[in-house]
Length: 377
DNA sequence: AACCCGGGGAC
DNA sequence: GTCCCAGGGTT
Image (cartoon, rainbow, N blue to C red):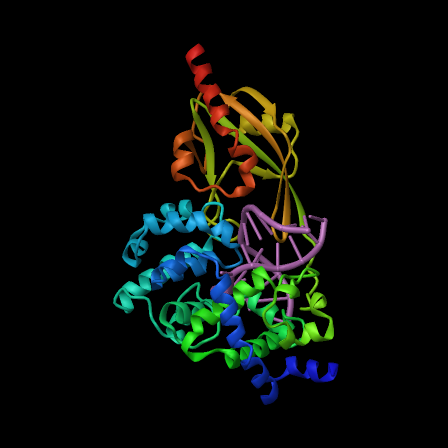
């Protein structure tokens, strides 16, 4: 039995198994009709909204996306508006969502669509796949949901559901296993309701077929057709590849405040948090004396230097352990590669990553104090 | 195939 | 603390 199952995930599903899977499509659709979540891109599933939602949802939970989605389609309601937008506007709309190349690729694609597709999102899977930021999953999702084209859209949720339905023992991080499971999804797909079916598989994965030790098989409409359930191994599947440990990085963050402004620096155009703004910072933990020497080097004469509470930020592959200093300066003198920015402008125009939220949170208060100092002088 | 790229919620 | 999320691009 296990050999048969293992073989299932290393090659194409066999005809008999495909026929068994096909029978599950109907109860999954019936479950979806009763349990589908109400979402803005479902209420109004035009291609542009579906596209924006799918990009935002890449590796990002629905609850996190919702407020961003509403604001984004309000400010940039169509493809021409997206194509013409300033990069600063895009990054500000994306601030805090992460994976910032997503929004840059969104605009690259919008410009291609304006230039080469008459301003309309392509309606074929193959053409969608060619656009920047659109891979196999997203092309399938847009094609099936917005255009009702019968192609699968297998995301992390659907992948888990399929791995359990087939009792797939292979590591689902492996391309070979993904290929097989995607073929199974293709085989299951009801041609006339592809969008509903794909979304049903995702909702089933996120509401019932939960990851790790917590699947709610008691709520599942297809448990009797699920190989993992029948074998009693639903809570053991899918097999996860071990994640590698995070690297720790020590940083010193300098929050300079002068005359209601703070000093910001733009990050490089490539790499981590590309193109976002940040407080000037250095690798390693600097002592107050070292900070004072650095400020002197920058030509800044601090009225005071105060050590702030330590802050930490966890990325997927690394951790920042930050020591912070708040520096009050009487004059906002120019500093190379940096700009002095008014507090209100920081809030409205400059995109800062969440990594600095421990500092940005208090920034208005700190800047207000500099204004008071100015008035006192 | 392996690595890079954010952030946060659930447990 | 761990897991993982409506993944894609680059090398």
